[in-house]
Length: 145
Image (cartoon, rainbow, N blue to C red; front, side, top):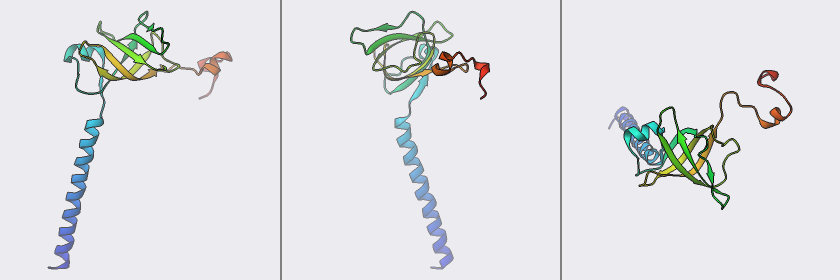
């Protein structure tokens, strides 16, 4: 066999191997991917019970309930629609987590529609100021940045 043909065969085998590796990686990532749902999406599409998902929205005012154990909370997540998702979380919440603020929760829906979160991420708006600067009396326009 000529050297040129051997190089072409090796190149073709390398391309096939890279393609197979890419397909395996994508398959593994698909199993690990978390899908994101807003309350309106859940109301429209139904509750995804078969996988871990992320939900996002605003923590509804007057919906936060802390359990006596000190680490379990219940709250409602809503969006600009009337739809809400009831969330239960056991753990320490982020400092920015509060009613009226944005939240992303990762976890699973239960058959009764309750969302059991395993992780809570608090979102802040574009006007966020670190507490240290707020305590010193600085305003958003006072610092360069």
